[in-house]
Amino acid sequence: MKQKQDKRQYTLAELTQGLDVSIRGDANCLIEGVCTLQKAQTGRIAFLSNPLYKKYLSNTQASAVILLSDEAQACSVNALISRDPYFTYSQIASFFDDKPKATAGIHSTAVIGQHCQIDPTASIGANCVIGDNVTLSAGVVLGPGCIIGEYSTIGEASCLHANVTLYHKIQVGKRVIIASGTVIGSDGFGIAKHQGVWHKVPQLGRVIIGDDVEIGSNCTIDRGAIEDTMLEKGVKLDNLIQIGHNVQIGEYSALAGCVGVSGSTVIGKNCLIGGGAGFAGHLTIADNVMVTGMTAVTKSIRTPGVYSSGVGGLVTNMEWRKNSARLRRLDQLVERVKSLETALTELERKEA
Image 1 (cartoon, one colour):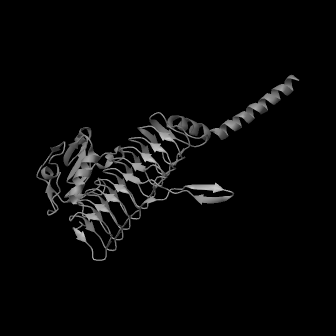
Image 2: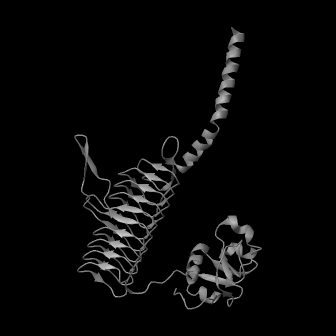
Image 3: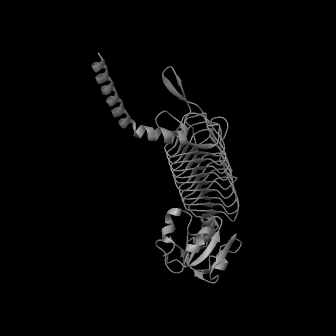
């Protein structure tokens, strides 16, 4: 769906062109922005995907709402009926994205190394430093202060925001987004102790980032020790995530903020990792695994499912819930045992 940045208002028909939705109401209703259900105003469009917000639907002041067909009856305004309201919202919201658009060209303060291949449509911001033999494909955007190491390549339409650092020989795919402050390709934590002294182990691998990957701000992704660290197609990383050397993350997995993954761990495809989770090294995580927030993953997970940890280490989420419920009743259980022991002692005294 193409955006029309020269307009400030769109009809519902224009916003939904090419989308798998149906309009119940006025297809010519003009929309000039997005909003939430509870803080809506005329001329804006909202969405309903979480049942917790259904209570705001009947009184919303939005001009239109994106929702499931089952919710449409309770909607008092124009309805966009969708099988996936949140996805539909993401497509419509792009019409109103007001981030500044980069223009092609190289800023006068940028430093460009020798033998680089830079597509004329690329945009290189102020104070960028680009090493020798770097390749920037069509539509690449480098924000101010980015540093791109020697022999690195960045694929078409990828965007590095301000102050991103790529070390040498880093491979970034197409349509990748990397937020400010992220460092990719620094040395992994490789040290060998000899006669009581730590000695650095050279980190000789690369980092390979697949197409359509998004990496949040202030993440660190270490280069491989021997083989490459890899983020496959469609992986999404939140902010403040540490990826150790030789880690592999499968297609379309998503990691929330402050996750730490130790070296040589392999995370499968379509995994969801909650914020603050930590992974020991050299583990294998199956496809379609969900790890809840703050979980300590200390062993491999071979079977898809939802996992959590607490007292007793990593278990399935269902077992963790049961254990947690029992733990909350532990004090009551102790008091009951004390009462039973007192009663038993009294009974034995009487029978003596």
